[in-house]
Image (tube, rainbow over all chains, first blue to last red):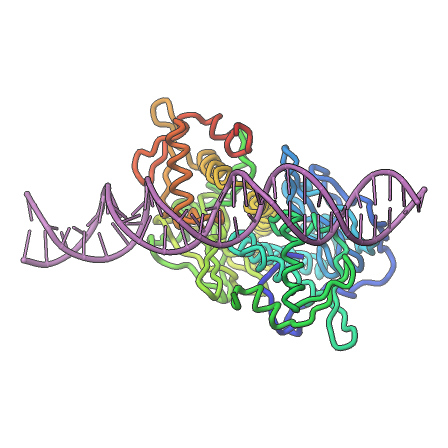
Length: 224
Length: 224
DNA sequence: CGTGGTTTTGATAATAGTCAACACGAGTGG
DNA sequence: CCACTCGTGTTGACTATTATCAAAACCACG
């Protein structure tokens, strides 16, 4: 999952064609805390996330870390370059994965429709990353955090009473490294949005969206 | 072109397989200032850059702009998502392009080897963008500018006397919007690196790398 | 009920942005 | 050939945002 341009209209977010396309058989269950692969590993499989949440990270020698993406249901992870993984990938929330052989992406396996879908997923990945560039390069802290909440709300928000609720299974530090901020800034920004009455923080990992349109405005840099 | 992790060893940068693979026929010449496509256009062609420089940009409603990438020889531009372009693309330096039908990427054209190469280019694109995330999210202004110069030096540096020289055909504002900085910060940072004796600015668009290893150190956040 | 990791808040500092002035250079027309 | 102008680049002064460092609060877990 990347932070794309948030939208008011949850209906127009095209859920990946991969959601619910395959039978239960041959799915992999992975536990929170386990790693799927490391940077430099040879790529044998791509994974379509069916449930759970993954985390893709990349490290700099001096310890700085970028969270490249979170893998939510419908996302595909594991795209290789020159046959190797270029991120680490671990599991934040117990997940079910649908593995596909690398050959399926490359078109040298039997199932042509799978090849087509994996290719389309790769192209969507490029587009999503381009949107995320805009966010990393141009947006302020509050716009980043608001955008992040908007996108998560669209993707995995649950209706609870009159409001939409979002789980944040990752640590604040993960959000920070995803958005190019520090944990402290993420905290302060969440606090600010809470004090403005736009969200409520039910517990550390559960956010309730009180004013969706105000949050959207924040994410776009309107308001001020 | 994205800003990947710079490296001392220019030899290990894999030049795209596309450099020099096709006959002169069917190449397109495009003039500086012209546009190849706009965001939202339906995708018919992908282009392999043979010579010249392209610029891919994405706009926010309020006018903020992200330069997504510069298209240098060996790069492939025009990857679609849902059949449409998600950036604008214009020409900075007169360019020769090798167009390929979208069908070639999708594998529904005759030439299987072309399909394979375009797919590999898309996968390298994803990997390069991941590296660029690290840069946008984690690096300081001086690290960004130094990284940018390092990567350009590796890609298109020319030996002149004892030194390597790099052309910067784009405006300072383009560099700024590519790195997530302001023009002023790009200027000041270049000035600082120049005053440190690491580069010389021959003219606005021509940089001479006086101390490549010092520049590399800067780009990695060593030094300090 | 401690303990360790995480989150939050506060005080302060540093980095990068903003706004404004000036410099430079290419192209134009007197 | 020399002002003049316009777009771009550079520098300076100041401000704002975000990072850093430190302390306290919170929570999960043994």
